[in-house]
Length: 381
Image: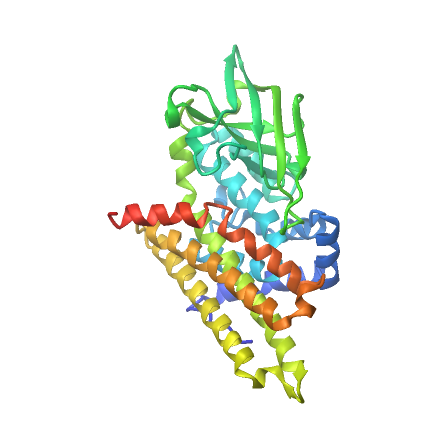
């Protein structure tokens, strides 16, 4: 199915085609289903992505990166979301979430030490913010980090931490002043092999190749220089990356919509009922038309937000809108696709996997409800 390229540059189209070609070679369809079934991290695909230099796409040239624009990243992540939700998650936890904290908040020595091996695929990262009693409410974090001489000692629990089980380093949010609300929150780099750190896989509905985890800190001792930025300075650091995060989650869902529509259209054209292809019936053809419109809406919101960011605009409204529109459209597309495919979609297979993955978008990276609050505040409610 031909998809509009929204004025993509030749380089962006080449980038999109290159990553799709690479993933087609190293992550064939039968492997997608096997990895999902066994909840296995896509290590071979991750290494291939690293070998071709893609982990450095958003990172500054002085550390070996390509300094990609927001539009570049949206095109790239849409392609990954189209091909495989889990490998996109594997990419983002290291190259977007982890690397952004190194780029913006680490010392120059830490950047020089960690960014080159990250780009080479030799260092995986994850972020550890959410807790059993605080997800959207970051000020409610209970994990404590107490200064003891030249070290900090961390105690507490994190939950839903994507890819913690395969990470080498995690960025941990902890309270250094429990009575100061947001101003008492600090960020730390923690070696995932630290003594006193326990990581346990969780059992999610979808995205099973990039598992969430529970993480327990029992007197985990780290050097004081592993503090990112100033003590108590985490809140503005956490806010800095929200626009790009929302943009790329929208791009993921837009790509995911494209894949579902392609799969379901192919099924419907070849499926016959009462002597006709089921696309001859408006009950089916109208659903496919709706799926197309929802997909287009997700893409337009996403790339508009990317252009606004690259123009230097205050694009909080645009990125937040794109994230809600794309993720909610993604689930609607998946639901309609499942209905069209019926039993063939409901059984274990590609459609079932895509349906399960689509449900995460409205939760991760800021729930649709919390993001509607953001929009309400921005429009003066």
